[in-house]
View (tube, rainbow, N blue to C red):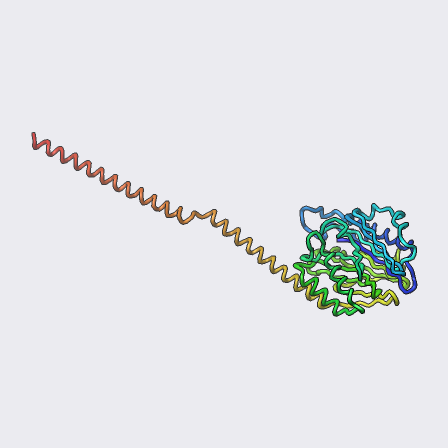
Amino acid sequence: MCRMSALLAVGNNAIEIGYIDRQMDHLKQMALGNNTIPFAYGHFTDSPEYDPEQKLLHGDAFGTYVHTPDGDEAIKKYQRAVFTIGKKGLLKTLPTQLDVSLMHARLVTAGSKDETNTQPFALDAIVGMHNGTVSGLQQGNNSDSVYIMDVLNRYFSSASSLDVSDLEKTLVDQMVGRATDYGAMNLIVYVKGLKKLLVLCSYNAKKVRSIPNARYYTLYLASDGRRWYVASETDHRRIASGSGQETKNHTLYVMDQKTGAMHAYFLGDLEQAVNELHASARQKEEKEKKGEKKQEASSGEGESKPAPQEKSGKKLARAHCTKCAMASKANTRNARKAQQGSKGTAKKAA
């Protein structure tokens, strides 16, 4: 789980340090849970291990990536909360003219808490961030996010243009097709060679527990004509003064850095694949539950009913006792007859 944001300069415009300052302030507020909807653990889980009223604090790690118009880039990662990082020290290390800025605040749910899993991921063809959980993609100590970005990096390493249908097929085959369950796969990805910012909103609506749960996976886009701003939550007007819009589920948004144009594409095949995976995962859960109940029932019957050997043993014992009683009665009658016979013999002798 995470909070994330991205700034994209359009055309010959640049992102001044003042915007990076405000972007970091916004991320800090999101990480602290100071937002319109204060997300709490109870919105996501009913586990007794968590206080349902406790706000989500995204304080496990912080990462930032910047890119210049000349192609230079810098990335910094911290294994502590963004709200503990001093802005002045960080901003001094950054170039003064930028065209891309990505920031990420992490709450660990999958993968180890180390730099390998700290986002953004700056790779050869892309730099990207992921929010959500796609079960079954985690490899060793690496989170599912590492796998997702590796797949996208390989895909765009050989792409000379953006083919949305082909990209959707990759998402379905390489992500959903290899997953065991699907929570969400929200992505912010800057494709270096194409100079495009891709924003994907995709979550399993059938697993949404509450309205805040759905809002958590809704992204917000805003543009003032000179730059685009994308964030996990609202209050975007502090960075981009123009009107904003909410993302829709299973929809890909593509922002062209050269022209500033934005196009949205609904990914119907992705939605269908997520729904089918959800149904399959629930069927598997039901089978496992039924199997556990049968096992409990069979073990309970074994404890309450005596074993067949015990029953037959009791029957044999009762039969043995009956024979003993009959033999005892016969012996008593024979003894009486013997006594009577001895008395008669004594009289004759007299």
